[in-house]
Image (cartoon, rainbow, N blue to C red; front, side, top):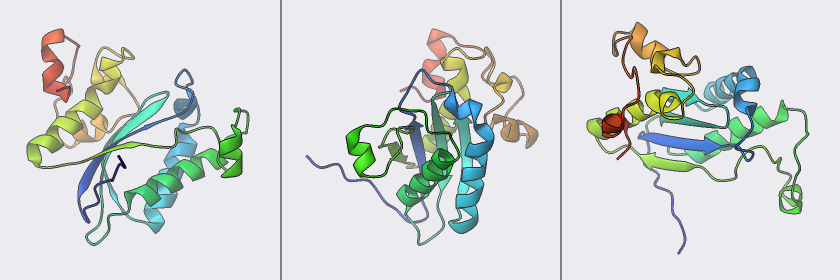
Length: 177
């Protein structure tokens, strides 16, 4: 079976991208390079970054594309490429990656989900903002510096104490369905 990505111009999508070495802290160690990669791509290929969280080894984001544009794959390819070019080449690279002139930093694929409705959107925003708590990096979502939760709080969309702790019975409230 061949996997076909959903492409819907102007839609909002939830994404998960992982680095190859899931024990690495590469994304946080080079957060400025990652921010610059996003900025470069957005300047040439606009999109709205609705929500994002950067963890040591992966990121989650919701991106809304302009009308008449559904090419999120190109945007992620460029973001990954710009980021990788700024990192000293220390990783082991397989022959397959070498033949395609790829680095070994990012996993080749990413996971995407086309947002279906306002509830789906809200669940994914909550999932993004709660993810550092879920992974045990912080006890309160607001304590994670690499998250759009701070923008949501400053705009009054979320209370500062939102996502203040992890309880088994709250899993469904934060996008884990």
